[in-house]
Image (cartoon, rainbow, N blue to C red):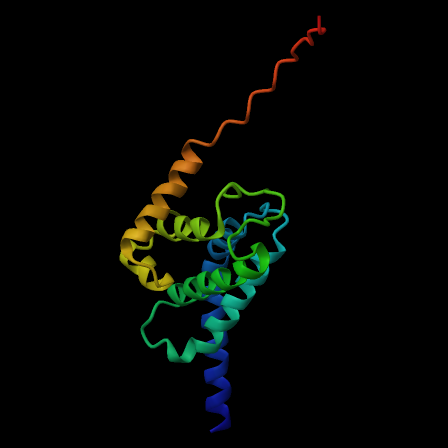
Length: 167
């Protein structure tokens, strides 16, 4: 009995290690996009990834035919959505200095854009994952894409006007 349990735990560990070897890089990149951190300096993204992988490992035996990558991605998205309230405030206004390519976007926009365009999750699945109507997901994704493709131009510097002496 003990030998069988040891063998089962060893097999589980090998399967999970193989999964992490194949999926961790992509999940870390997705987490880095979500947190808008620089790729080389991404402690929040690494923390998100660690929690998502730990959650996936805890559920490993209960996945039964489910894709472990989907489980990890869903946990990553859930944790980011909850953590965004703490990191950025309720409306994402108090963000740290932008570093990443998606830093110009609000957290919800980043989440939807990463799920839809980087991860290729369908609109219906994204809406279900986030508890939003499909139309809202579509509108947020469109707004985020537009913001990235057509960034606001910085204000032109004011020309130094000459002062006119009063007569």
